[in-house]
Image (tube, rainbow, N blue to C red; front, side):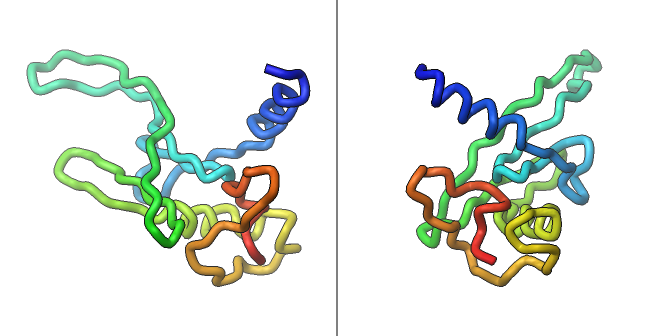
Length: 126
């Protein structure tokens, strides 16, 4: 890996902020880079054995419209979330691109960029 690419990736990772997903606190978080992760936690199996679930980045599904979706699960309940709308809701007024204004209603499409990094809260159309 080139030094330039390594520096670029370090910058992306350092700029990433995570917030818990409303109604899913302690289970899932979303980042300003449009990533969803499971939180590490202790769980108990049906036989009473306890184990630690490792946190990991969840796979996102992309619809034809470009919308990023993710399924969240807990016992007895499953919900598919719209990641773009969630990022707008949680990070919208904190991004430098919108100068403190509420997020624009720009649909599901992400802003296209030449560098290929479209999935960032500050890279949305405002």
